[in-house]
Image (cartoon, rainbow, N blue to C red):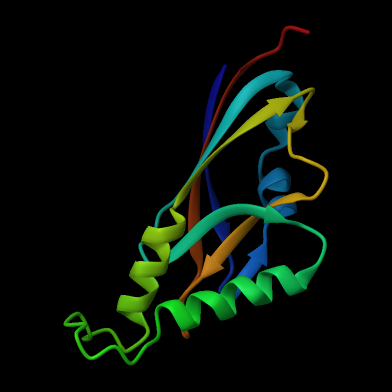
Length: 142
């Protein structure tokens, strides 16, 4: 079984947002997949996807604070500035974290660890809605 769907996420503030439930809700066919893989590709270059802590929001805050310090907006050697001072740092953060995830599916659910969740990293100050391309491959055998 192959299935592909675009998932639309609303505009979100800069920072990290837990989107595990959004992804699962958008893919009702997940429940038919007992063994498989879900590939998520973010269709943008200034945001990221990562798998991390799903319970304590301080982890999302701390990673955002770390990235803002690692890649600040005021680096004088950035030349790509036409889209604003936050754009090039957003591209760097997206490249560091990545824009794709591949996740195992088991018994009709994402096979995540106890404390794992899917995060969208929004690295722009004024970003718009975001799109994910979800590709599910699996079988129905038990």
